Length: 545
Picture (tube, rainbow, N blue to C red):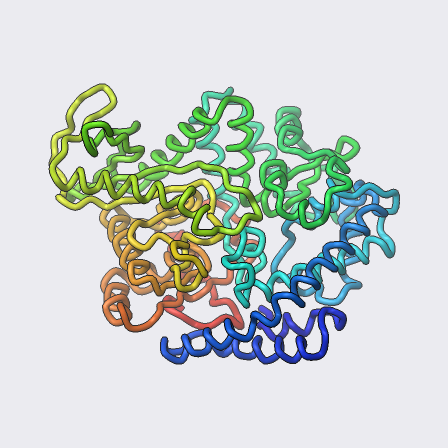
């Protein structure tokens, strides 16, 4: 994995003047020495970086705009059908400076942008090379701006670029997508279509057919092809749109495929393989309505929780009266055999991809949900009755203090794993309420041995972020910390850290074969696979290493 200084050296010589280059060299060296320091030294270094980096805001913004304009211009010369043969793209990439960044981080929106935004007639050649160079230059500048904290908190686009990458697993995404379909009331054939499209996408992205321009030789059923069409953006459909707009539109997530001359192309491979639940959720909403899609999300979450051994999950919302005018409808109510109880809310609000998670968007997307949960927790603890939707009153046989959990469809630019001090906003991560994206909930649940194990994890996660000085790259890092140390050791970690220094979770490197590998057969197998993951080379070692 490349370090900050390695990434900096990949910038083209024209990105800034001599003074800016010298300053950036100094700051990247400081960033590399920042990780793992005691809090007092770390805060001094962070303050120095913040005070000096303001002088780079203008030069880096100008460089990003310049590279984006170059990419936009190149798109007017390239034939969008170029994407049918990946060898053209790979050949152009090999000839550009910084191509190892793409090899390490993987493709994001670049191929999709080329497919839907191009309007020319040339396949391959110099213009494609110019486009690839501009996209790499733009990505490297985005990485550096993210490291320096420019423009406040990072956006979803920037978070995808930050090292190390957010780890995703194709099996978890596919499981959630199937559950969304099951809860939507749409025809069951849609699940068969989804399975066939997933198989096709896996072979296209991990085999050789795409590399030699023979995607059409991969079998795909008529129902799979129809689903792909419904999740597609036609080639050249967004021609004339600026490169930066193409990068930040949510359409690359909700429509990650393109059908080019009858051939299905997974134009955004990472979304088509490992974020397919977002595209399926958007499809359900288009085919039905927002309420049906939200109910499907709640159904999927309940089924996932039901997979925890010993967890009793009510298959519908309950009411815990908050006050005279608020019946306190609560999406999730579950209990364990030892009397543990879980109250939860599910949020499927659609964020704008590329929009930074600010205080305002955080409050709109997560803060309101957390406030609702807190009211229901207080009502539960003061002894309010628990009513099912038909009016039946549940007997209270549970602990006085419930665990609370928020579940979201989206990741909110990584705000779910970074404390406020590390993200640049007042409320960029929930400090008292665990909030997990639904695919992350699936990953966590698969590793749990029983309900008590799950409740212990939630409690430690709550304690981890309560102090406001925790940072993880994704939920996987937190889960591996818990699995490696165990409940007692993790609790001792928190006792030692609380109020004194930050906890940086060890970042795990997930190889492509693991990301696209099969679903685990048991929690024992899944734990073993997770604990075998190496630490990201070049990233500061932290808890759970």
